[in-house]
Length: 96
Image (cartoon, rainbow, N blue to C red):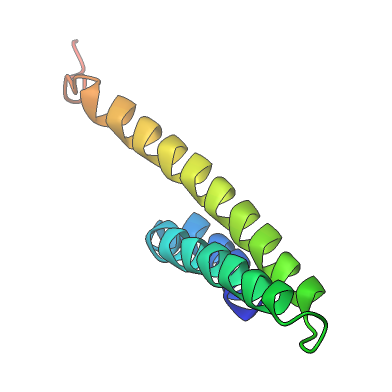
């Protein structure tokens, strides 16, 4: 659950400097992996362990953070790719 929250909190940082997407994607994936592992461990405990809801919230938050970070990363790459692809013709010179 904590990794999912951290991944979601890194997304606004990524909007400012586009580094947050690079950090939010692996943290979100780790939240999903650890959440699935925790749910499997809890289910194997036959009721002796608690925290299934926290594991599920980590999976959901990690999935949301990873999805949003991938979409924002693609939009940033598209924006910068299109802006760099446009030819720069220089500044127009005034004609008398």
